[in-house]
Image (tube, rainbow over all chains, first blue to last red; front, top):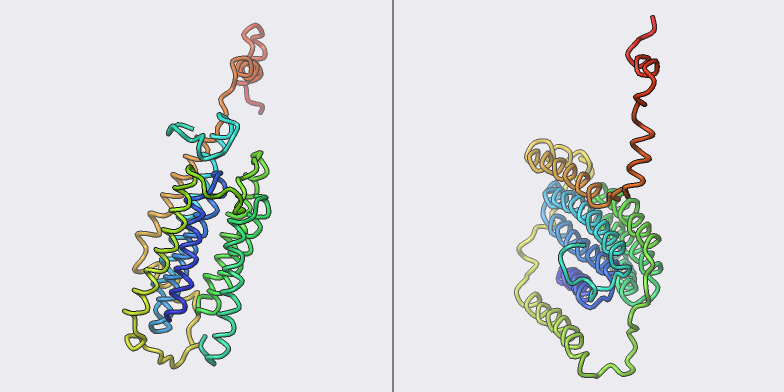
Length: 99
Length: 209
């Protein structure tokens, strides 16, 4: 079991590192998806460790998947707004809250 | 799906290596289209891992939602946006004064990973969980999930539909382009009924037969 948690933690760290040290916003959204998937994997693994009819972890993962999809859609639309107004998607150009 | 421990181990380690390679490839690739395809491969790898972990419905839902919708959406936006080259990850001229914050971030994330590693290997033990699984294949994954989803988790389900409606409206509002005044005039001219011709005006009110 500790092997799996180590792997999950590694995926989370990879996502977090890419989230912080990336230069453009699209790669940031992609590492956000990596973070979401690491968390979902954790829930499914712990749901698997109990009885085989324990499905609560998988239902939580369903809700997280839908939430991640909605968040990615809004984030990408904001990226488009940034590109329309600033013609660049570098993180250092994002200085104000308005796109 | 623990038939044999060796089979489980084989699938798990193979998928683990693949998923880790894809996840690192998302960050390392300079070309962002390659990076998006590595992300697609990552999602498929995670779906494979869900299959090993007794979540067959979730594996298919993962492929549909993440690969089929989210990855395609990311690729559409990569297509629409002209992405400049990133700063490369080579080690030439890395140790400068303005690189202090990224280098400390890298070491901090390694320290986070290493520190949690020690915590986890010391405190978790396998004896708390049960591995006794009789009568495994009498129920299917999908039927169990759907029973719970409509009995105990009905309220989050309905709230999620409201959330998706809000997200839909918000996305359309953000992405809307305002018309310029000349385009607005053209549109009004196209749509409105001209005032000079009463025959045409009355024609809209008279029904045939």
